[in-house]
Length: 617
Image 1 (cartoon, rainbow, N blue to C red):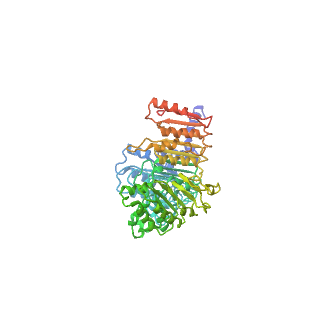
Image 2 (cartoon, rainbow, N blue to C red):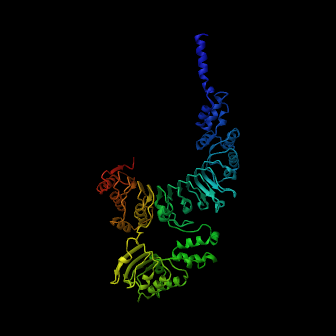
Image 3 (cartoon, rainbow, N blue to C red):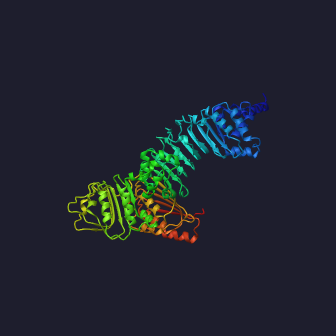
């Protein structure tokens, strides 16, 4: 054999290496190609012809759809035709399908339903379905995909068949703009291996009830009707994020939820993401009028306990079953807000306030465990009626009494000191003169006294011993290590108190991130209460010993923001890094002044490093 012939033979052999690749390597190459590129490999050699049909993963995503549009394939339902061809030529099971349904004129989703039926017979383990049309009602075939591990849906209606019990292997779920159908209501969905659940802009989430004992990460974005008590009540949860992104005034809600209640459920959470709109939102309502008469007894009681007295009284018009149901409430809050509403409707004529309180108590056959009473500044000849109310309470085994008096000093009658079941006592503008035989409050745990005159017979040490006053904190300590606040308004006293309360009960906090938001247009807060609170020396009663890293974004330099920053630096002895990004709307002089002021703040940590970044970078 001549040298030239040998060279030509070797070149031919070397050039045909692609046909001699091992099967597993060919499969690996195909899995890394887009579908359209994988189809093109059929021209490489006979061995590669239709080899792409052995792929177990098909990605027909938005990029795939755009290329079809580019070549004008949408004429005569071109997109549907191409997807049909891909699936028809695919004899092997498909373990993963990513499908983007572009915005096109569909008479129905009949073809998409057929694709879902095809998948259900092929043991699919990962399904990503992004729909850019109107809402797509998932067919029953999807719920028979028992091998699913990952599920991602957008713009769909999630309405399960009546016999559906769950996905036994599902581990990761992401749902965006999904409507949960009524079939879920009352039916428990078992997801024993679910570890991560993300719901974004979903509606009717109150219909979703899952059993996911291994759920570790829960993220809710703009899902105001989610039943947080039900979804978050899971000891395995370590990461939780709840953001509303906008105020939700007058939005229909199905449960009362605030920060305190949520934290009492999240016992083991380590990373907590939250925005200011959730902190501020406190609405309560019902979802469907026809359900309210059929609510169970314990739920009716739970709803009433969370309503103001005037709103609870109004529930009598809902149905016969709700009529006078408010009289079973064991907690009555007749606070300053209650009194202001009476004033608004000119109810003070002829001792209107006293008359209304009398009516509430007369119509109340049940024992009252809690009474919060604000006595407004009205012309009282005596406190005779208030004495009668205290006598009524002493016979009702009251456990919590809050009495704020805006009149002249009110001498507490002896009936108050016979309330042996008291666990919490809060008084303002009263005369505290105990009877001689008074031995103390054996069950008292929480005491707050403001502007009190102690009489000569009073022995405070009888009920202020350390073993009885065990609960001075508003909330129990949590296990949070990473805390993230978004869209916080420190001009709002409600948000300031909530943020400080959360910090005070987070002894394990290591990292704190804060993103401030501009003041919404047309919204104004009375900043004085927040300023006074942040300037008070004991507004944060705990040293954040574990806090190491802090990040602040969109800092405007407002007085409340700077006081809060000063407070954190003074209470963080382990702090080693602070990153600050000021608001993009600030000019050079404002940024310089903010930097100067922060550099002058006293710091509990000697090694604290402050990184000041340009917002435009």
